[in-house]
Length: 195
Image 1 (cartoon, rainbow, N blue to C red):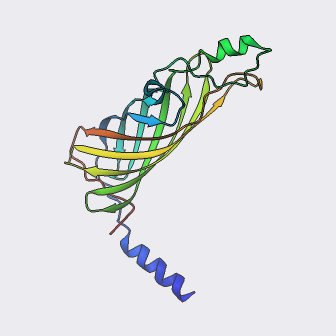
Image 2: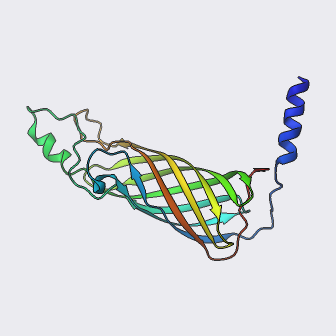
Image 3: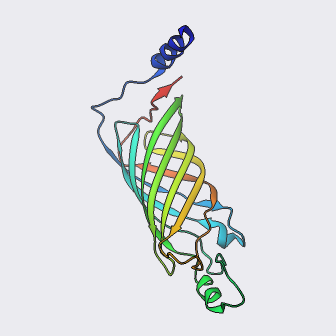
């Protein structure tokens, strides 16, 4: 019990007080990433543009638009030679556009580096509409008060709205990427905890 109290005191002493008076700041971000999809580079490349607001120097909420990839030749279905129509539909899966809401929290800060955690929920348009969930972690570097760089990795999970077990579906990939973030006013990145 004594060790737990000491641990809690150490964690509490390193937690930053949130700046409740910090103004909200608008940002725009370009975030290309590479997924582990099977196929060519076009199948693996997934770009995103995000616009959002940062609140109290620690939390951002963004709205993103992106593409799952740039290839229309992905075959992810329960295809069977007895059902050629499934293969035709499956060939249409691919470079679908998606819209997503992305909340992001700055967790731990050391100097100009901040560990980030992002969750997201989105909708994939196209011949096979899907619900998209995102779980991402990254390291953000404050290059200046208005430009930040972020290296991130995570997973997209797609869930089709088609209840048929033979319906084509999106592969749920792992990805790695980077982002360039432009804030329209100076900001100071802070984490919930810092060293």
